[in-house]
Image (cartoon, rainbow, N blue to C red; front, side, top):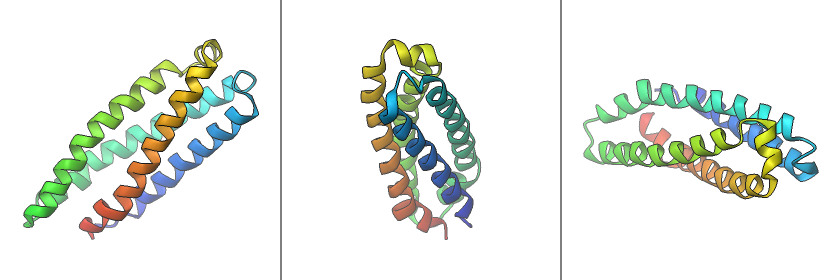
Length: 134
């Protein structure tokens, strides 16, 4: 399986993360509208990406003859559920400018945690999971 599309979606998510980080450093309240827009766009990309993994990547890996590949795939699937829940909570909490403005400090703290979790997951998938599909 060609994983280039998955990797390209990772880069898009990372671009959104960088944009949000830059906007937040320039002023959370002043850039709340643009931050919310980027969160909502990123959420759409993440949802499409996960749906594609669920429909194509994971079933292919679970059909592997290798028990190790199946084990690793199941682990990634389980972990993704927790990460997606945490991201979903973040996106819901800060999906509008007013929600960001109302609690800008909490936004910064939550964003840093989400950013770190997503970047860690992306790096692990590209290093450990995607090579199993090739």
